Length: 310
Image (cartoon, rainbow, N blue to C red; front, side):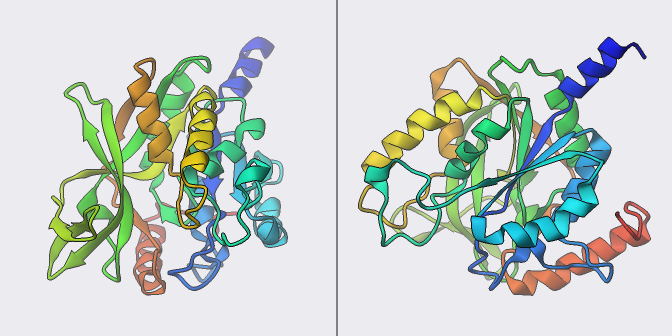
């Protein structure tokens, strides 16, 4: 291979950004570094492994400064020599000074986390949750899509799942409900912060807090988005407006779907909906852990993953 094309391949390798600053309040601990196999694998380990196999070349962890030593201890050695690793921090004070509220205890949400990665990410990238298991195929489809996109374009994408494949039996979850047009592009995404299985039926809370049914085949986002660096242009302006509107609301969170909707409204950008047939699984609650452990154990038995990932 000519040197030029090797250089080009290097440039073309997308980055994976991992949202890992959440505290896991419903889980009861730091699930980002909790072990799910006898070999000590975390859920992130599988995402990193799948992403490396699919051709991602750099990993950016968005964490709280207080997690830094734990994360470096768990992940640095595994990725040494395999990919570049960068840590960025999402802290309460990472907002303009006039919006800092001493009563606030939680970070500002996934949209704010995305903005923290701006200086670390100059290439096409995917962003994922730390506590979700997306499956090998999802990373392959996403990597292929990102490699084909022009870094200066507004061509974005998202990995979509069926709602029924993404529910916990142990409590409510939040999902981005997607509307998809006939060409397979996203026309709207709405953050549904409370979806729950009640008496075998899927229900969501409306704006008044009342439960209403939601179709189990609804297409949802699991926060697995594919962006070019152009997405940051939308996010910064929007976050400033959000902060102004929510100065006194210490619980308000700024979500990635808010950024995506602004992207869609602009008319200059598009979001292609990529499909994964894979059964997603994740840990919102401690009770979910056993299900995930069994699923991972089965995948190792089927040789989808080696017994020792690293």
